[in-house]
Amino acid sequence: MFGTHDLALFILAGWLLNITPGPDTALIVARSTQMGFKGGAMACAGVAAGIMVHILAAALGLSALIAASATAFGIIKFLGAAYLIYIGIRMILTRRGDENAPAGLKTLLPLAKVFQQGFVTNALNPKVALFFLAFLPQFIDNNAPSTALAFLFLGVVFNLNGTVWNLGVAWMAARAASMMRGGKTFQRWIDCSIGALFIAFGVKLALFQR
Image 1 (cartoon, rainbow, N blue to C red):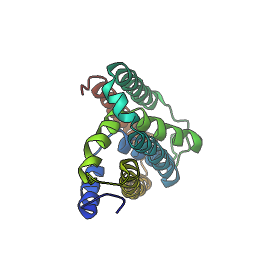
Image 2: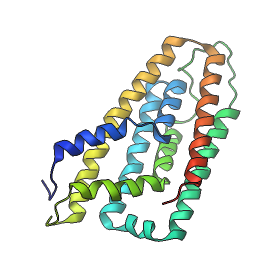
Image 3: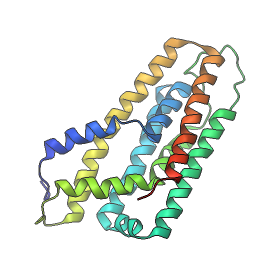
Image 4: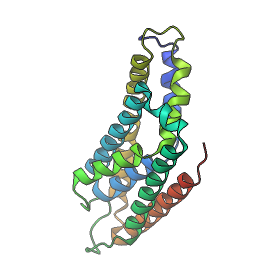
């Protein structure tokens, strides 16, 4: 379809890759435990929008140009790393006002801000761009009538599958947080743990070499 092959294998491989934890998953879990499923779902939407940027860039050949340019790749990499570290520090430094508020039911940010965080976290991660450049061509026919259309088709399929998984993660995280009812102490532990994880992801991205 659209010059692709082994679509079932591609979907299976995509599912296996999507369950691997990363910055996107960490953000979804954080917002789900803090704001409930609605917050987690909005983070999922932001991540999906960020992935579409990489899909369109790969289809148009922009990702290949960025990957070939050490300067462009380095700028995007360090911007992405700085943003991840920034989010991590904000999570650690955030203070709660209500000691007795049940975990998972706090509204810390406007939903538009949560969407923005999901979008920027993904869009500024050059490792995602490299992933699409390395993974998708394996499922595109050499004689495909349009390589760009094949990239776009596979990318959308991957994104839809990933979004379904991410929504499941958001629901499970929100559900677990609402059941724990740990108040401020529990939520502080979650915030600090995920904040430290974001800082680690940021440092790892800054040190990443192609």
